[in-house]
Amino acid sequence: MKPKINTLLPILATLLLWAATGQSAVRTITSKGNTYVPLNNIVSYYGMQFSQPSKDRLRLRNKWHTMEFETNSRRCWVNGTLLWLNNPVQKIGWQWTLKEPDFSKTVEPAIRPYAFLKQAGNRIVVLDPGHGGSDKGATSPRKIYEKLLTKNIANRVRNLLQARGLTVYLTRETDKKVSLSERCKIASRYRADVFVSLHADSGTSSAEGAGTFVLSLPGEYSTHSYGQDSAPTTRYPGNKYDVANQALGTRIQQHLIKSTQQTDRGVKRARFQVLREAPCPATLVEMAFLTNPKEERFVLSQNGQDKLARGIADGIVAYFNDVKRAKQ
Image (tube, rainbow, N blue to C red):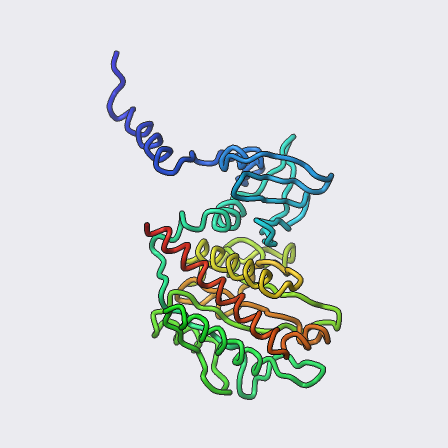
């Protein structure tokens, strides 16, 4: 008896999808009501090889990409860049697993950004120099204010991007206070394709490094609030761009660390207002710790500022190149 046409259609659609992408859907498992992706299935999905270089490190590699996961930890590295997972890599039965959103919203955008950016734009950038006016932000030991550093770096990034033919706007051109909501409205008025908010951090005198934040996922913790109370489930306007946010944040962090050789604090998640209300893919970059004397000297130097600006600009351009590839 011949198979019915309506029975063959789903099979045919699956085969066509596999032929178009070169990959089939990754297989998942369910445990206690949650969906997980076993690392062994990711190995098959990407055509990788699995190894365990140490008892607490798992490595997946092919000729294009290397992923490393820390067991029972939220830290993973994709091609050397630290990405913070929403949940720890954990063992279910005999196999190590990722919670499904960590695969689809963290790992996939870092490995295959071009697969998700076909509808994204790649021409208009809005840079947001953090703080301003009476809001000085962090202060360095030598009384350098964050609001001045962010404006300086924003100008340098703008010059680099304009030299590459991009249209760039700033949320503030002078030392004035601009509300967080207004910064996002400015990005909307300019029809921004990306919004990048620039900041410098503060902490102990030994705290160091650069990190990039993207918006937390609904129902998942922010990186620094993991395990506290229950994770918020609110879906914000910025969550429309969850995958693109991660792709953009990964590219910026990757190139920022490559340019500056700073300590890699990774791509993290937070519910900052400018990320919640962003009208396009958005990140917030913490460029350095002003309270660290070594990093203070770095960000005050011509060389340091050039490296910071170049890393951020190169990251934005790399993301736009991903968008171009997606459209092709």
